[in-house]
Amino acid sequence: MTISVFIDGAVGTTGLEIADRLAGRAEFTLLTLDDAQRKSPDARRTAYHSADFAILCLPDEAAIEAVALAEGAKVRIIDASSAHRVAPGWTYGFPEVIGREAVASAKLVSNPGCYPTGFIALLAPLLRAGLLPSDWPYSVNAVSGYSGGGKALIARFEGDPDIAFRSYGLALGHKHVPEMQRYAAPSGLVHTPVFAPSVIPAHRGMVVEVPLPLAAIPGAASPDALRAALTAFYEGSTVVQVHADAPAELLLHRSARPVDRLDLHVFGASDGGQARLVAVLDNLGKGASGAAVQNLNLMAGLPETAGLVLGI
Image 1 (tube, helix red, strand yellow):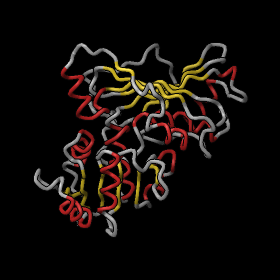
Image 2 (cartoon, rainbow, N blue to C red):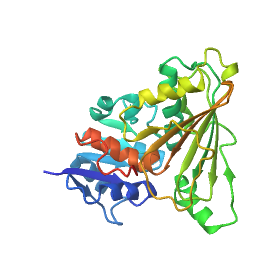
Image 3 (cartoon, rainbow, N blue to C red):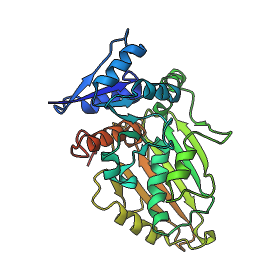
């Protein structure tokens, strides 16, 4: 008997990529709604009450409404929106950090945001180990391909080839910040991180950086110790790779193909007084669709990386 999955918002970028990763997998049957039904509350309610799993690829308000439609159903939900990432009763779907067992046993899982995936992957192991303090005012600089902004931003970039760079979130208070602050430290960060996101004219790909003035941070470990701690924390993971080398440059490519891997780097000054923690990922892969499929695998009791594109 196959496992039934309903992707609500299946025609959006994230939903389409989830469906691609599930295509051809005999374990799953996708429940689909035609164009006339996909916005019908009654049709969606029926799908929720028929499915084993539902993946929400919706705007935040619509995701909240979807959970109400599913009330009373046996369905287990993965929400790819930001609506429930710090909400009570929801498990944060970052198995490498939160724990695979916690995700596997949850009924309600909130997929991490793309930028927070890089930030939390870099900082959480180091703060847990006491190598960095939770009361430092951290900042995060990040650049992403335009697909993370959904159909409107995709159309804007593809319709105007003169756009070279877009900086945004300039009023601060970006919706990704609460999950960054909550999950980067065991009891949360004391100070709200300063988040500086930007977009480049590439469809996919993302670089997330946390700069560290180690000489000024009380109790901070050396760059080598930070790298060693990350390596030990993610040992055995086929999704998260910590690199021992220090390349002279990191590149994003306009022609990049989908990948669900997360690559972490620690760059240190020769005197050990500064470091740059850097995560490289696909904003539509480990930053969205790949993470949803990874969580679905765990929740369904299947091999964690089944159907993922790891490029290893």
